[in-house]
Length: 73
Image 1 (cartoon, rainbow, N blue to C red):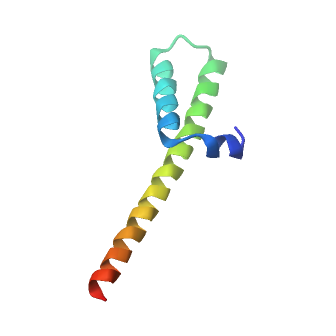
Image 2 (image 1 turned 135 degrees about the vertical axis):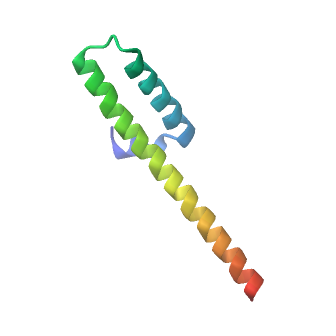
């Protein structure tokens, strides 16, 4: 997956696709090669979700810090 494709993938899209990947892996019935490909895709999707969540956390922390500065000043 290219960087641009990952950037274009929203959190909800990545999360939903990750849920589907996990469902398919848990259901079984795939070949070893298919299972490995699904696992690799799942890892990529998890990274996308993690980046989105880290970005959201940073924005929240910045907003809270700004609010504290405003209250103190």
